Image (cartoon, rainbow, N blue to C red; front, side, top):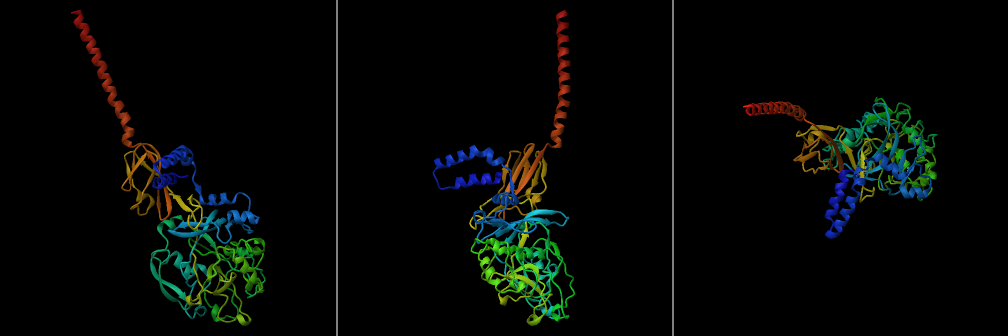
Length: 497
């Protein structure tokens, strides 16, 4: 338990409406446990989720119901929250988000791979076009390239990211409407906890409407990580005339969930047969057998990512054919996979109009690997609270002060700071070194606990003082000795006289 949490528990006890005698008993118990509570090591969110699941993959339905966690059957063996209502709520950005899972082998911009927690906002920020375009570009229905998409801009550089208001794309032909994220855009605190990663933007590998791939969750996981892009044009159709270069990866902070994230979130048909769902096509159009739509509808009923009231965008483009009755408005350069309200995964052109009832946007992020679990059981009423150490330790001298806002680079007004250790004092947002040693500062801001490690060292003046003292004492001692010698000498002379 962190010192912040320890202090918080004591404050909670003091606020309880119980008799003083009971409070004394509770506080006495807390004091007895102090060495164990305060000295316990901080735990990262990654390790916390893993500790719930245990070391071995959950395979039986009883284990699944108990923990709400299961490992997927992908090559990366990710640990995911599954079922209708798992305890995966997190307080993030001053609102509720949910943990998709602990993802392995996530690529970072420096070429490394890490194990990171993936979050998705619990509620949509609204219905917006994935992308839109002028009428002479793909007939106005957008371009299915994530790195150039309108929704990517909204989430990473636009009104949502900057917590402001502006114009957002809401239909074909670059149609725009007013949008306002002044109250629910990303806070500075939230941004500080998000890590930049390499997102996968690959697509299915066939240009046929009814593809040869079965399209089960594991297939989609591979599609997303493939080198196949979303543009394969036939007959030089006007819906496929853009000149944008397609990519299959994108490096950034805010994305959307993948089709496979949705598919792996089910606990099975009737909450019991997960294996059947993992072997069922999540997109019956992809496989060409409409009977699978009913199967996956049953699987969707036991998935916390399923929304029966609307359609939600994913991050993945879809290759779509130009053949037969499907040679109309939709085409291979505009299609995006989305989750249908009936439970299966379908596709639509990127510039979906708000009036069509589709296009819900759920921001999705990866958290920094050092984000800490503070407390909370993950329920909606008691979501997981997060914490984070300020990356650089702070070193000050005895009697030296430093402003806290200079350390965490954010406003510290009306922030209460807990101090672990007697090496420092905190007054009016300033830290003063009291004596040498190490102390921990902690506070809560926007639902996140910040920790600052402060090292206090001797000041230059203090280091000089011992030398100065020695320099002063020696002459005094010499003077005393000389004085004693003189006094003895004078005394002897008087005796001789």
